[in-house]
Image (cartoon, rainbow, N blue to C red; front, side):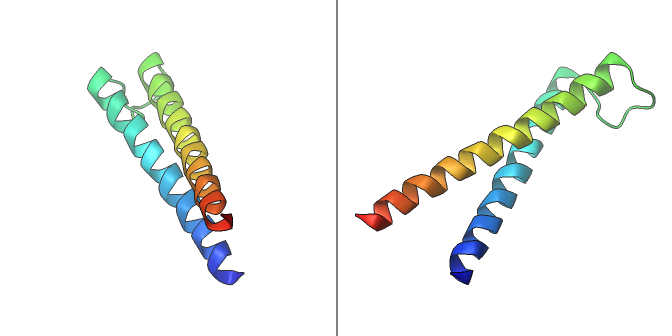
Length: 74
């Protein structure tokens, strides 16, 4: 059971951080700086991309884990 929980935690973390990094770099390519001073459109756009990327990465990791669990049950 603890191995399953470790796999769940690590896969969630990797998915979230990976997705957030992809969102960050897409923002950088668009010229949106998440760390810019103030709350201008550029920094808000960067924050949104990082947030969406992290959420999508987490969902992808969970779907991957669900498919792995289905394979193990067969």
